[in-house]
Length: 399
Image 1: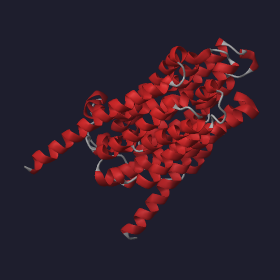
Image 2: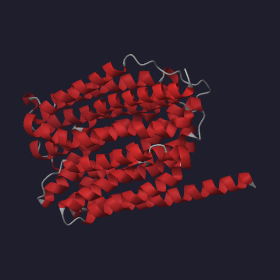
Image 3: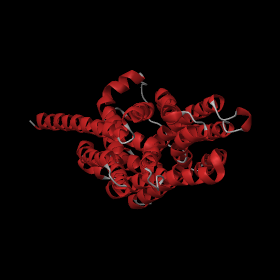
Image 4: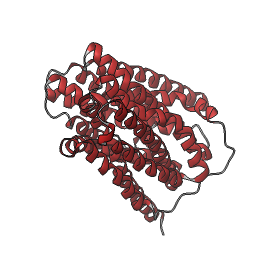
């Protein structure tokens, strides 16, 4: 078999794996806007509780990223991925149980919901790190940027579909019906991936997680700052529209997802070709414009354009900075590096939910996007400095 045929077969397998991840991640995407509405309207617990309901999932994700990375390095990405799928199903089952009549509509139901969201975050940790480690080992280091771009397309494509789909199911079937559907999706994904062979992990000395973080924290900080804008949009766009009396809130995540996926499809290989910092700089600038439009939007169409530009800007920051991060570690620590790198984005997601709730209570819903704009501008400054250091390093090497 020629190299072209081998590459074509590997790419088809990667696309199939991405499709399976897309289906599994719908269980995450459908619940994100639905949880805020369920907590604020059905349970009557307000903006802060709504933000915590979304953001708490990222707490368990952050705390388990190192564990997921080590598991992927030691047992293989497929093993970690399947553990994540089982946890997805278990989390949806718990969230479904939180809507049972015996718990009522109050604090008891909310606490069970929070447990389910914590389990969901744990599943997300294993599923994403496992999938990336599995796919990168199968495709090879030269295509790491393409792998991260394509896998991310599956995730955020799920957000494009999952936002309005989740709100539609919530309206017609209620929260229990939505969660019942979410139980089945990761099981279907597992059936799709079952027959694909695992890729062998590289062998070598396992460094402490803190040592790996020390090598990649700057790249991780950039992706975390990028994530503030997305987290604000994902958690509060429906409430933002309701506060203005606008219709079509569910399509905000669709606009975000369409912009995200379009850029991933058109520019997915750019980090491999021209370097991650260049791609990240342009991407962050686009996200900043999107956040500014959301903050100042006088009309729902302007807000939708802001969501679209935010998606286009967020699209390539993770694979661009992720590529720079994995370059800094040996192959046998790649899973650990991915886990640590992704934890910075999780931290942004986890903190933004409750923080944005407090800001919305005191200053109104548009102000949460001002916070996203400020974070993005800080990210541009950090990326600019990383680009300068990288250029200086290349210059000294050539000298």
